View (tube, rainbow, N blue to C red):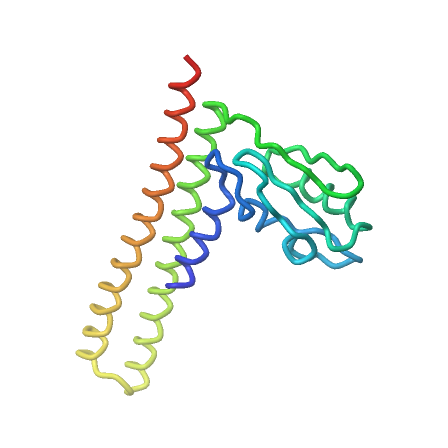
Length: 182
């Protein structure tokens, strides 16, 4: 269940909230000598300012592949390749894009909750199998299932809390943008 929460956090890191962050490129996979590898393993990623990213590959011959991987990702950024490094500027986010991002965040949170529920289901099946094999009593299974449900509820609350934080950041950032555009 802890791993499900880590996966939700990891997914949320790749969602832009108005500030450039190297974590935005964590999901980008580059075809490097025929093998898909993470971008951060073959390049240094930095943020020279709040609205841009700089990708410096360790091997200059991989620039084209990195550029292709960024273009094909769903980041919505256009890379500028100068032969040495790749620069990307985060475009201003529109109201439409904000709504899309809020939907993506909600979907990722729901996927995390489903993962936790699946873990609970598998554990209950294990309990029932142990009961059938006479290794656990019916009372033990009920106690364990009750404890498992409490733990499941805690993890659901954690995912919901992480989701609300991300949603709040997205909404507050966009309100700031909308207010400054008048």
